[in-house]
Image (tube, rainbow, N blue to C red; front, side, top):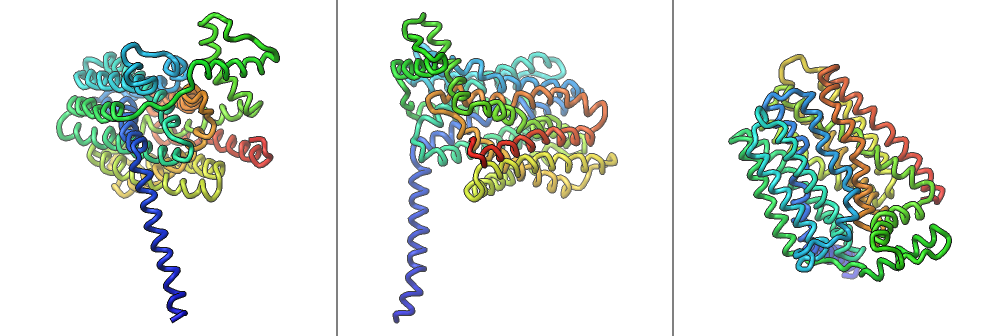
Length: 465
């Protein structure tokens, strides 16, 4: 009897522990802020591809020249320069809205309404006649979306305690990825079955999900003006080596120093000379995949795959592989720490671009088997999930909560700016040399990220980070 009892007890304990873990997980993920951030993540993820790869598919389907399509990638530069208006979003009140919704939610709502209006406009335009108008409408969407992102990133970090940041990030990414599925596969299916106009109009209507979440959510607590002023003054005094009496300066000087200078100053004081290495790493980490992404959908179409094929394999199946990569990376970060998954992600992203180059080399004018596309998409999205998850975790660890909006906007702007600029020449490279050469160049662009990860790993091992 004793032996049977001893054998049964661990099984019972394991069973209790498992169900206890499930209950705890349920309690965490059903908290109001966590559910709200999933819906807000949907509103953040919806517009991005509609002015990026989905837009390039629309233009290519309308037989717009690839060189012209490549230049449309520059619309995405808007996401990369949002740091310039992040201080305004961080501290400027919106009359009539901020009093009711608060600083973060009022700016989130403004961004959501701008996205919906821009997408609705795009849905009523024809690429054959209104190419410039489509570019302007896409710019409106990108500007409104990047504005929403600044406020939303700050909201996500400020609304809960540090212990729930992991759940908030996971919930946000889930909502974001579901929205990406709608704006990529969903839009392609709708365009295939109905029209591109109908697809973009419906996407505009789906922004209602984010608007509802904005009204449902609560406003996070902020430092009041006195607390912010005290923190700003301490940073400025340390920089100058003497009291500067910041509160006695004109209002515009206090705003400029507090909203623009102090967030940058705090980051550089905290990291010293390594701050430049960190910023350089942020700038080049996504260089390879952003450059490649502009020509992905045109490449699939030129290979002979239908829009439904692309939606089914590259988008739906690709999303599954991306989520798998994210899950794998979560385990790797726990076991290995931050830097080794970053290195693995950088190597895989660059390496999978060579698979696209290989697929382009084997293309003889007839459509390759779908199994080839599945293989390449699997590798690309799995590696992308690993790389992006590790990178978002890394960026989140860099931000100081006292200057969340501006600092995180700096990081997220810098991580896309070089890639967006270089990707503008992608169509020109394809037209001039070919797809295989283009994807090979995209792979080579991943080398700086690999080298800089190794530098940061060495500095971390020395205790400098």
